[in-house]
Image (cartoon, rainbow, N blue to C red; front, top):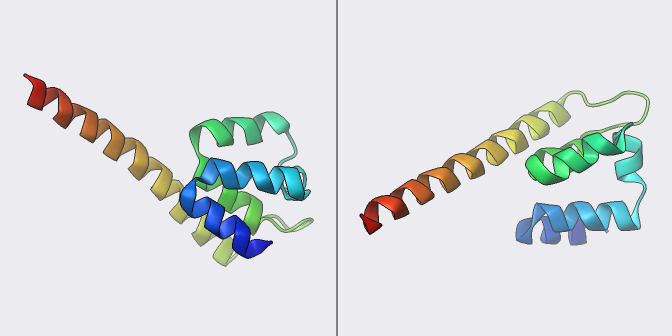
Length: 95
């Protein structure tokens, strides 16, 4: 199951989150509120997926899990920054 999730995440983190939610109870365990998971799905998909993978019931996220979540957060931010930058370059080319 883990290899399938990794392959899906390479295609789309949102697709991987959907299948993790559909096929396992990992999302329910990692997130106490469904709204946090939905907001993460919409705005920070890599971070949400990393949190669900790194979360240990009763202990939370610790050790290498924090590195994983932090790296995923940086990937999410980088995707927003690069998307905005690409849009700005496209607007400059048109004018």
